[in-house]
Picture 1 (cartoon, rainbow, N blue to C red):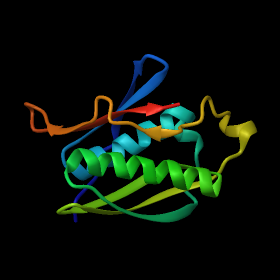
Picture 2 (cartoon, helix red, strand yellow):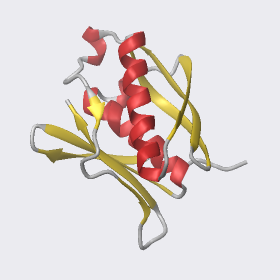
Picture 3 (cartoon, one colour):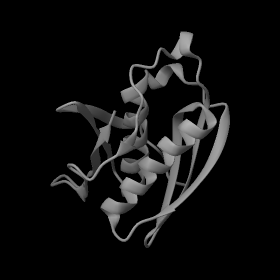
Picture 4 (cartoon, rainbow, N blue to C red):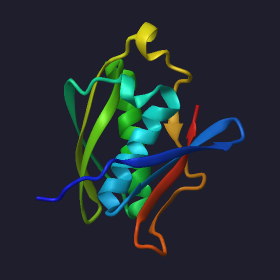
Length: 143
């Protein structure tokens, strides 16, 4: 069984939008961390209880398009369910991703959402291992 380190993620400024970047020893963990960064655009992920599980599946012709599809699937689920997510699990096989997100319904008073994520974009879309072997998954989110 693989052990998961504490996810490492960050956001970065990009004009009127916000970039998200996830890091991990595997591509899957970088995707999970990028999803956590997506939540970080909206609210403090530590304030979101991982009480409800939502299954997510998507596909993409390459790693970048798969990240794009994953983040947009999460944004869609947030909007449809009125939820925020704080825990993620991703499995990638060829051009398909299966995963889960855990979260809870938005509580405006407690979560104090800063923005609404409208969608992942192709801007600065990258998935690749760095020189140190750590994977980086990033793109800009339209807010």
